[in-house]
Image (cartoon, rainbow, N blue to C red):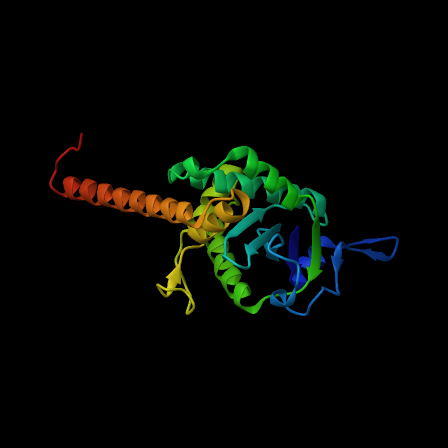
Length: 239
C-alpha cells in the first residue's frame, strides 16, 4: 500500500472545483495525526508529497519518509492524481533498477519476485493531508536545488533521463542523522537496502554483501577519477 502524505500545497494541487464543489482524493482525516502513529504494518510505504511552482509549471517533490529517498516530477498536470501515481511507480521502479545495475547489485535481485511484490504494493494507495517536519526540511533543500538549476539552465528537465539524473544526484547527497551509526547516511543506499529487504526477500547477509559491493565500486570509481586527474596534471594519457 502506498500512503501519500500531502502538505497543504500538495493537497491544493490534487484538488479541483467542479460546479462549485471541491473534488479531492486527499482525505483530511488520516488514521493518525502523525505518520509514525499509523498501524499499517511493514507493507505500507509512507511518502511525503509537496507541490511548488517553477517557471509557471507545477512540480511535485515526493520523499520516502523512512529513507529520505526523493523524486521530483516536473510539469505535472494539476489534479491528475491517477496519472501522477502511475508516473511515480514507473520512476521509482526505473530508479531502483538503474541503481542496482550501475552498482552491480542486480545479482541479488530476483526480478519476478520483485516485480510481483512491487505491483502488490502499488495496487492500493491513499492520500492524506498530513505533513512531516523533518522530511519537509529535506524536501525544502531539494526544492531550492531544483529551482536553482532550473534558473541556471532556463528550463525544467526535458525528459525522464534528465529527471532521473537530478533524482540520483539528490539521493547521493549525504544527510545527517543522530540515530545512524556513522552520523550520516545516503538516501540511495538506504532505499536500496529497503528495496532488497522488502521487495526482493534478500537476507540480511545478502544485503550486507550488496552494500559492500556497492561501496567497493564507489571507491574504485573515486580512485579512477583521482588517477585520471593526476594524469591530466602531469600531461599524461591513460590507456
